Length: 238
Image 1 (cartoon, rainbow, N blue to C red):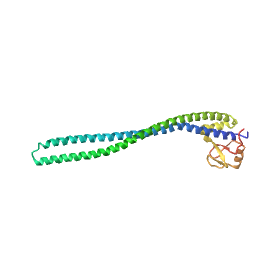
Image 2: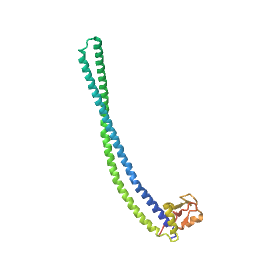
Image 3: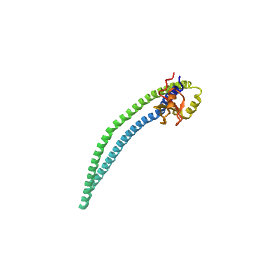
Image 4: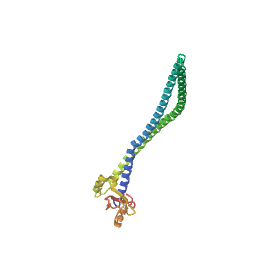
């Protein structure tokens, strides 16, 4: 093996892979919560639809009660007609009866409109119920799939950690202390690929001599950002 360069390249790959897996594992509960929020939204829509239908029926009932009360008043007025002695009082009572009947007709029209609205609201409820049921089915399936994915990610992470420990053990003794110090402070961010003579972390150009040394697998730090460097031109480890 020419130097630690190939080892750093593999370490960097493994550490980035592990970080990506950790991100996926950590995002699992958030993804599930987002899916569960869809259920809550659909349930809220159903509740609103049911409440709207209920309120519509209450309004219809109130208006029907008002009609019955007005009809009772008309009946009372009609009974009073035979007891009135003057034409003026008779005409006033007849006008009151006519006004009450007009009010009943108006309320009946309002009830008809409310009934049409209620029918629309009633038809909306089955769709809202189906939406809730569908959302619950989707979330249940998502939860099963997520559990499988998370388990797979955990297994992959454990395998990657084993590989990482094995490859780190191959670092030369004179490199390991500095590697351990940098890893402890910056994790996988302490390693950077040099591509086209440029450190891809800080975009600083390395010298021609550094480029040659990196291609031989030498252990070098970026003079600008202090990261451990490797290049894709480094010979493969082995």
